[in-house]
Length: 298
Image 1: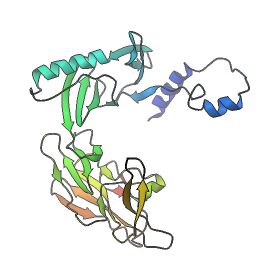
Image 2: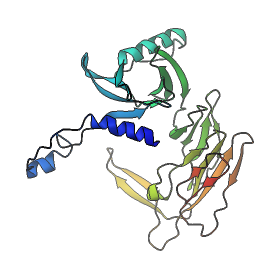
Image 3: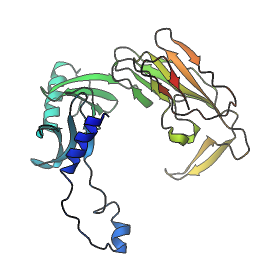
Image 4: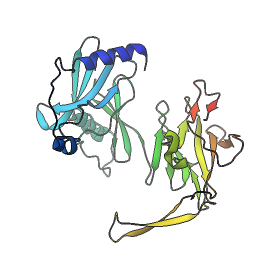
């Protein structure tokens, strides 16, 4: 986010700031019971920048139907607002169903807003089930972008190409925007994991798949924890309770080993970064350089 956008956002948020502070001593009950109630900080739901613009969007209660929400789009320099309702989205969906969907395909109207991500200044992406749709709010155009096969997890979509990398079980796959999904890894041994978060999410690790900027190279974590002791716990999240096995190295025991692999979509070959010793070291902050010539690992 550049300095100009930061300044615009600060100016915008200033519109919502109170002009006078109110001093009142809170009760113990309020401090404990209202942390997620009236004392919870006010926020703008689903706040997003529209790419390449000085516009932001967020969700608010729809005055025409208080059971629903509408999307507000604010042009910060001019203070002009425009609005998108679920009725607009479902109008586009209806036309899409008439034009392109098969009789056997079940496409239901949106009853509430799904997570929103902006593809461009006019086009937002919406997810329904395992399918990704694009919606142009300026003309209510609606079309399918891609879909996720059954069992897909940890998905990471490359915005420019529309390709989706994901895991199924312990292996890594790619679903191209136009084409059938295919496997990158074929590991079957217990304890070999690809494309998932590693090192128990320490040091800020929260994913295991990393597209490069061009969308033709895919870095991912490859973890071997077959040497780690297999433990178990009895869970009560379902009835009856279920025993679950997991691998966890106790103090002084052998830990898992992680590599960073890179898959080339053109050659369909995999290379591994030479990260040296010790093999049990943490590999964090995997990042591609802007020109895609280097991978940075901390």
